[in-house]
Image 1: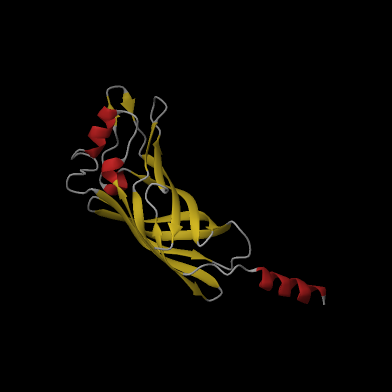
Image 2: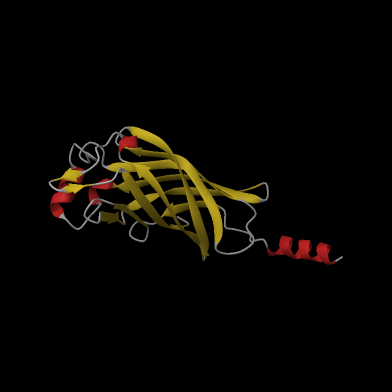
Length: 186
């Protein structure tokens, strides 16, 4: 009898999440990155992140279709020379490719508390090269919307980009990317 009551309680406690269309709020959402090098490394960030997320209840869990973009022209590293090189034709070539894009799906299995885990899978596109990425997320409700955080690593060379080198600075191929997205109904 106790197991039946615990099972019933767990079923009742499951959260009913808001569904529908949400927008990624620029200025409140953020993408940061960190690259290690032989001198300690460097980081960069932008809050010019936008997109659309459509959340649906599916089979006792939730799934979301995600389309997002990062304005690569606004990424700042704290060094104007490095920023100019990063935006130039050798790296991001932001004149021709102003946005880094992501298209994919986020899934959350039976949500029974907050914050709850989700997994974001999809294609990250830098310039003309797309690669599959998986990003574990931590998601929480924010009134009628959501806040999600996660991180993953990619490699410069996976996207056809050279590993940064400048004088005595030699970077590693890995890039740690962190996302913090605020989603609100439109």
